[in-house]
Image 1 (cartoon, rainbow, N blue to C red):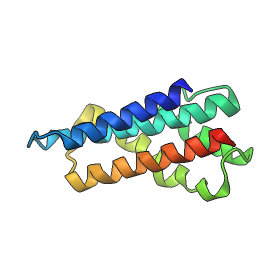
Image 2: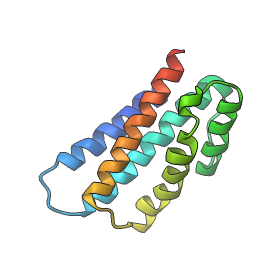
Image 3: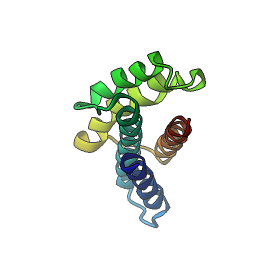
Image 4: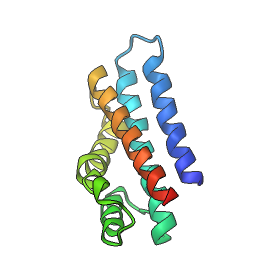
Length: 128
C-alpha cells in the first residue's frame, strides 16, 4: 500500500538524518517533523483500507483512528495509540513544521520510536 510505504520512507529519512554527522541541533526538529509525517501516513493507510477515506485535516486523523477502533479494525492492544501517538503527533507536527520548536536528541529519538511502533501497528492491522 502506497501510504504505508511512504510512512516507512518518512521514518527512514528521519533515521538517516539522526545518523548524519551534522552537529546542528536543528536536525532534531526536522527528524521529529518527518516522524510525525510517518505516523500520519501510516494512519492514512489504515483509514483508506478500512474506511475508504483519509483525514482531510490532521485533526481528523484522531477521529478516524477512533472510528477504526469502534469498528474493531484496530485490536484492543493498540487502542491507546490514538492518545499516546496520534494526538501528540498531530499537535507536534505543526510546531515542528512551521514554528521550528527546539527538540533535543532524546526527544527526537522518542518520536522515531513512536513512529516505528505506529507503523508496526499499521502493518499488523493491514495484514489481518
